[in-house]
Image 1 (cartoon, rainbow, N blue to C red):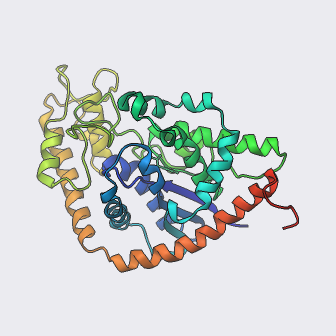
Image 2 (cartoon, rainbow, N blue to C red; image 1 turned 60 degrees about the horizontal axis):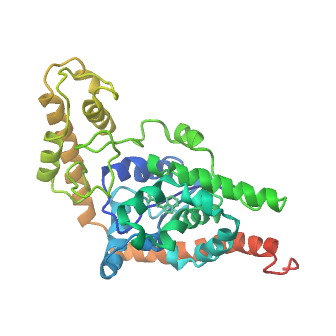
Length: 342
Ligand code: TRP
């Protein structure tokens, strides 16, 4: 039997931040290290998704490689033959399956996607593209082509995992066969990766919303390339409340609760701070952890070997194109684009 697939994509034109590390990178890297051989691990760059909101195209190549380096600095083991890194646009099956899948996807269900609504509201009608509208279909194809069971993503992407399941199941039912292996439910995935995997890090400046790359000011976001000094400042000026007293309570004290969660994610002990009257010591403890982490991460980043990345890309892209093409061919046969005789 072939191995279960764990897959995630990290967009290149977004500055990566600690939410990505705990939400997507570490879950997948931990699995890759812990169960080498048991799972196939795909960590890829959805470069075609980069155009869905306006970008500086002259920077994209650089950003793609920066992200790949970050995967390696975060600990992705490139020498493991079950680990694959690739660029979406190098595997044409992603685009081809999307064009087919579009015809089984409702306008209404895409219009209801929260991320589409949020992003289009920000862009304004004239700048919303068909590409942005179709974003979830391409993402579903990224996942279905490899029959990925587990897809660690941030909470904001949960709806896209659900639509992936819907589309996969829809075609399976429509053609009465197991064309696609669909990903597990979001709940099952959270159980698999463990609920401490930081899928819910909040913005430091506005702890009612998720830490997100699309935050314009970046004040509440710890980016992986922030200098330790800047990161410390961001933590120390994190929004808290005037209630006083360190308590874990997301409703009344979202800022403090987020800091307690962060401390735990970075391996500290939130218990030591519960009940304290001052917020300062907790903030300092979080700042220490965050700056230690960034220093170590950034020093690893400088020693990443680019040639190894290029070699791995070449091998992975060839192997993954084969896998993806098998799924695509099955779909093409089923929908009548190819003869069933092979
Ligand atoms: N939409 C994801 C994000 O912005 C990136 C992505 C694209 C992805 N295709 C994917 C994530 C497939 C997981 C699986 O975070």
